[in-house]
Length: 238
Image (cartoon, rainbow, N blue to C red; front, side, top):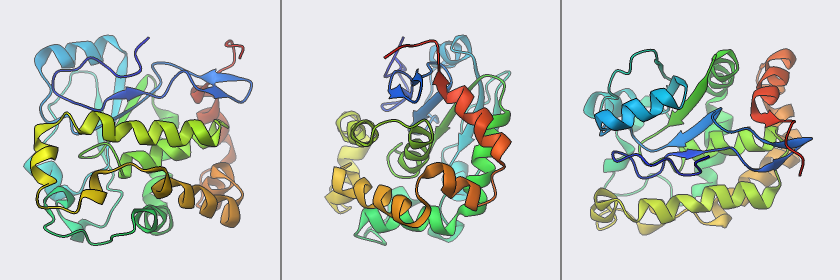
């Protein structure tokens, strides 16, 4: 099994499988988090097809997608569902960050993009095979969705934070990121625990947990139960 997939055209494509979860462990080959897929090599596409990928959820804005479109992959549906306002345009090209407090940005996503998050979860639950969700760097928008999925599977908070933190290690190897760090506040490229911990606290204090947050925004109970069944491999004893 792969934690980080050996793709030549991405730096941060990872499987959410292998974490201790409620009644088992998170399942492999069900959910992948990633940075942009615009530079996938033909062998990457073949690998993803063998990995049973059937669905891509693109969290980027329309402008970002137009500038760096995802290659068409036979047998794979691509759903564009932006997790930030379209007015932000291409967030990777900002000369100055619109918001310095990354935790506030993440909380803003879960509060202001409820309809989009509902659609994301419903799309994931309906998918037949492996689902890959991504943004540009695979850190912020992707990190918020990964956090919700892992908490829905009752993964420990420390593991959720660790999954988020790993992003910075892989992004540091991307020369485009290294170049952009020269013009964008460095904090935007970090994936520090203090960015995500307040978001988890907000979920707990406002909604109890990810499950109740998703129910509050309109995701049906049967959809969440099905999503949990996809997330968790009960055959694994931990």
